[in-house]
Length: 235
Ligand SMILES: Nc1ncnc2c1ncn2[C@@H]1O[C@H](COP(=O)(O)OP(=O)(O)OP(=O)(O)O)[C@@H](O)[C@H]1O
Ligand SMILES: [Mg+2]
Image 1 (tube, rainbow, N blue to C red):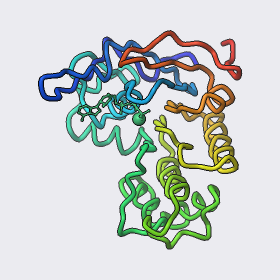
Image 2 (image 1 turned 135 degrees about the horizontal axis):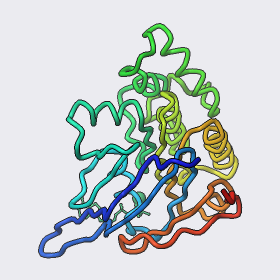
Image 3 (image 1 turned 90 degrees about the horizontal axis):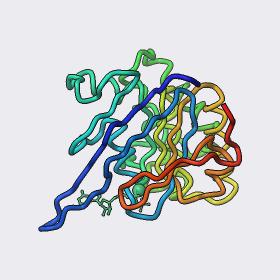
């Protein structure tokens, strides 16, 4: 866990809103080590989702830089950036972003569509992932006939099934009961042990303390000093 996988330099994302300028992410310098499980906490509106979207290559900074494995995201061509999002990054959105007219299974399978996995294996891999998160009996349901927590678990399966290098998880347990919350947290910890780097935005301090190595706090777009969580390793 020595090399930096992600590094930001004076990262800013400002929004214009009427005559006001909102400093959603303001001059953030962050390093995420390869294999790290990093928690990001902070009040609602403090900039957590904004920074996740920037790092995932889904949004562009107003100023500043992001490097992934030493390469600047802003220097990537459109194709390279699309490949970064498709192959390296897994994203669990706060709002799920599932495709409404497709079943749970199809939603997860779709994540494998752009990778190297042969078409005849996609369904098996996707259904195994859904079984793993306890949705084996809901595979043919469309999002509209799934509960909020079930939709969230489909979104988690979709993010993990393609085996990304880094997972950006935006409140992945926000809609889950305690039992499922525990199940998902353990699943993330297990994936992290197998090498997946994770950036987890959460309001759940218990989860952050228990499962991450390190926690940073956002406050009005600024990132405050990190502290080690209970689970933090002294490496
Ligand atoms: N498209 C936009 N236009 C203008 N302001 C925006 C836009 N998107 C986000 N913001 C503002 O940027 C700030 C940061 O938003 P963000 O979604 O990153 O917060 P958050 O920390 O994820 O909050 P939560 O915990 O509620 O999910 C908020 O004040 C929000 O209102
Ligand atoms: Mg958010």
